[in-house]
Length: 271
Ligand SMILES: [Zn+2]
Image (cartoon, rainbow, N blue to C red; front, top):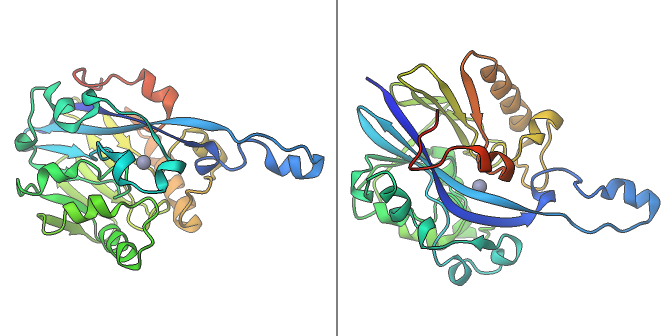
């Protein structure tokens, strides 16, 4: 009894300047000395989610971007355009690949509430599906919305979920179901979490959400402009590195374009 399968979902591709994720990717620091301007470097960022098929319920982790992002996002589109989104990337069609409908989902968990994670969660409001986030994340996202300073949070996403069946947890760790642990890390946003999943077969997967966008961050122990809290970031990175030393433990860094290409995606399950 426990986690039977994990499926990765493909919600399209977002693009952005690499400096959001890695410090100084174009070598600007060096350039200031050499007085040779360098071009910004852009990268593709796959937008992803996952279905965790557990004997006690089906969990959806993150919901991708709003299908009408270009229309509804406002100026943030210029910074993070969705450069690929087709019908195939719609939540309902990704679920269809594994024989599911939104009605079949028992829990929706958000690693955080940014525009590429909460954009298709509107499917679940009228279904009364539990929507689960760290308390600090929901508080921060709604607070910023009221201040009119949303940035990577989208009012269109949050408005759609007002009155939904929200559940929040506080503190460090919450076991959603046996083998599925939601772990607070902060660092990127004030309520960012990572998710540790242990399968029936005894494999551990650590979903790093946006706490780690690219694997280079692990080596360099630093992040670009998307760094939130440096204390939480360094502490969280070391925590992840310790967890990663456990046997049969894999990190899933799903925003990385090279890793994403290699991961098996729905309808295939993670091995
Ligand atoms: Zn993201």
